[in-house]
Image (cartoon, rainbow, N blue to C red; front, side, top):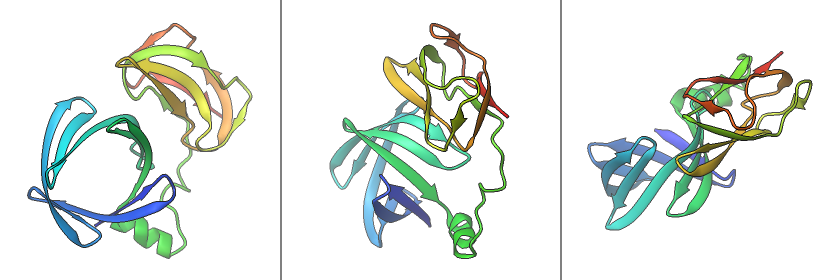
Length: 166
């Protein structure tokens, strides 16, 4: 079971198996069609949803999704994450962030952070245009900006190091 927290407000328990999705103990039929990288079309109980991943931090399992034109911040917690939380531990607390990489190919539009800045988790670092959409690249954790490896106007590939932390 996966627990999904949406916009730090609503919480859902999810299970997906064999074309079925269970949301808070209610069973639904799910039909999914992948449209392109990071985008899919879902039909759940006859309702249509176009879902695009705008931003993904796979390490912390935090995602920014566009669903039918609305943007949602979604945090996912699997059973291990939930157990660690109940024990008062955090899986991400022991991991130090060394750099931020481009989640997709794109064009650097604007830098927000500067060398020497102290940033917190979720602070905006830069704007990256990808697939004709402007994406805000946020800090995955606390740290001090050691180096910025890109400039506005630079084209970057997926996994290009954008910013390094001390």
